[in-house]
Each structure stands twice: as structure tokens, then as C-alpha cells.
Length: 487
Image 1 (cartoon, rainbow, N blue to C red):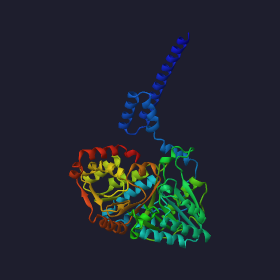
Image 2 (image 1 turned 60 degrees about the horizontal axis):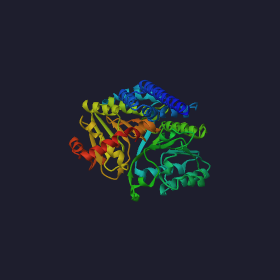
Image 3 (image 1 turned 90 degrees about the vertical axis):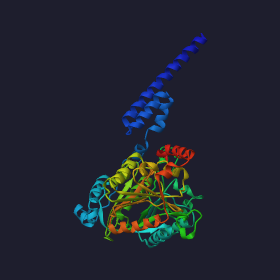
């Protein structure tokens, strides 16, 4: 009797397991067929689900379902998206056409495409000044904080507790003691790049700060992949700074730090500063629940220069892939030249195709990467992809050490994209980023001259060089490339 009961229970268990495995496989297959935008990924997952019953379905629901965008949208749901009352109207197409030289008139179509995506106006009357390395950027930023009289907002990914970070914390504290309203937003992961963190120093200085999405929080288990990578400083709502530079000693090359990092940042004046402030206000509201409103945060800003500019925020929320579409639009419209500087080059198939098509149309495409990377694994994955663009005429240059963290895109000597995003899946799909698109010949010319200085002594990579790597090296790099979607 006992044996019969045991056999019955055993059979019931087997039938239940088979039924559950079949149900999970059907559900996983249906989800992959309906939701996967890449048919190759859908086929691969469906095959894996049925070849490895139960385990395949479980792994699909863990790793194959992209919950990041949905989670980001849910986290930001029901939050007001603030748009300041613009004192300056959007630049009309005919004015943009007059601003561009004859060889750049086609870029008005790019402005139309980006305007439709980001739903922010292209604003006239801006001045954009490049600041090379922390040696130029940090004194200008500290001066802006020291002269602020009403408000200071700062968002950054990394805020180290070193000599530079401490100087910023003290300047922010002095501003608080002058009666300035100061808000500082730091990515929770970025605070961990130095120990002890800068947070204790900020508390001691009386600075109001917040951490963006603490990783491994039990109430936000999927947020560990969503990092705020923006770098924006705004003083009195009128003077802004943005680019790719974090707050850390390594960027001050004149001080000969142990781990030097080249980078470029930008001082921004004019009406587009309002768009920098809007992005910060949205992030601060999401993180703390405090709404930053009024003339002290959003004053009327007068014209400051000739540059036409617009903010391009990007993230896994409602701004999903807006930067990717901006890059694809710029590559498709380019006629003469494209210059790209990025520390991490891990393009997806769409970007690879756009780069190759631009080159095949006769556009000179230069991709400028650091010869020395701070993340060797990512550098290996990148090398495994270089042949895909080299064989169609794109050129890759490796700049001399130290590591170059600069992020820049120049098109046809008239259009500039600057900001915080890298050319990899993490920046284009997971991180919250902020970039500026700018239309101005003189700004493009200044930055083109600066790029030329970085190309001095740079090593041009050839297809033969890439193909000539030893087989173990190519296998190592190829394995690293398999993890590209997660790097």
C-alpha cells in the first residue's frame, strides 16, 4: 500500500513537472515571438527554450525579458515633466538655413528629425566654450559656484572624495552658507569609486544631496542596471556646464595624478541652459519628490552667442533610444565627414550599418579611440568588432596615452554632438544620459582643430593588423564581444 502511494505521488510529480515545463516553454516562446525585435534573437531563444526544457524557459524569463525600460517607465510614472516657459521661441527652419553655410544646408533635415524625437525646441542665442581636461573645466565650474547668488544644481556620475572632490564640496558648502539653494544628485554606484565616499563631506558642509537609485535595493531589484550618467552643473539658472567629465583628480593632468584621464567639458550660456536645468529638475523630482520651480531656478535668459542648440536627454524611460536615433540620423544625413571620439566603442548592428553606409557613400568616417583603456575587457570586446567598420572604409585611430575619456561627434563641419554618452549599449539603452546638439560652423571648427591635436601621433588601425592578431587573442576578444549587450 505504501509503495503504491509512493508510485502514485512519483507519477503525479513527473506529470506536474512535465506540464509545468511545457507551460513555461509555451509562454516563453510566445513572449519571444511577440516581443523580440530582432528575429535572430527570437529564434535563438525559442530553440534554447525547447532544447533545454524547463531550464531554458526559466533562463529566458530571467535574462531574455527586457524589464529595464518597463521598470524605468514605472519608476517615473505619474511624475510631472516640467517645461519652463521659454522666453525664446524655437528657431524656425528658415533661420537655421540662413545660419548654416551652403555645404551644410542639408543639416536642417537633421534638426527636424531630432526635434520630432526629443520634443524640445532648437534654441538660438547660445555660447558653447570647450574646456579641456579638469585643468580648464574645474576652475571655471568652481568659479561659477562661488559667484552663484540664488541656486546651484549639480548632477554627476562620479564624485570622488579626493582633492578635487573636496574642493567642490567646500565650494558648495560656502554657497549654502551664503544663502544659495544648492541641490546635488550623485549616482549611487558612482559614489563608491572612492572610499570613504564624498557623502559625509557634503553632509558636514550642509549641502542638500541625494543618491540616484541605490543599487541592490530590495524595493527596486531591477534598478541596479539603470545608472544616471549625466554631468550637468547650472549656476543661478543661467550658466551651465555639461560634457563627459566626472569630478575626480585624474582629470587634472597638470597635477600629474597617478591615473591621468583626458577629457573635454563645455561651458554653456544662453537659453539652452534652461534645458539643462529642466533635466536636472526632473531627475531631482524623481529622486527626492521635491519640485524645483520659480525664477530662481528658471530665470529669463538673454542671448549669449551665435550657436543654435538643443538638449537631447536619453534613458530607458520615455526617452528610450532617442540618442541612438540621433546618431543614426546624423550618419544618414552626413555628406562629407564624420568624426567620432568615444572611450568605449561597442556599436550595435544598426550603428555598424549606418557607419558603413556613410563611408560607402563617400563620407570620410574617422573613429578616434584611446590606445590605452581603463577597462581592458571592454577594449578587447571593441577590438573584436573593428573589422566590421574597417572593411568598408571607416578609419579607426588610437590616440596616445593617457586614457582619453572624451565624447564628441562632428558632422560636415557644422554639427556638433557633445555630452555624456558613449557608443555602447549601456549608454544607448540603460543609462540616463544628456547630450547637446549644436549647429555652428565656428564651434565645429574649434573642435575639429582640437581633434587634430589628438590625432597627432595617433596610430591608424588597418584590417590587416586586426586580422593578423594571434588566434588565442582573437578568440579571447571574440568571447569578450559576446558580452557586449551587458557591458
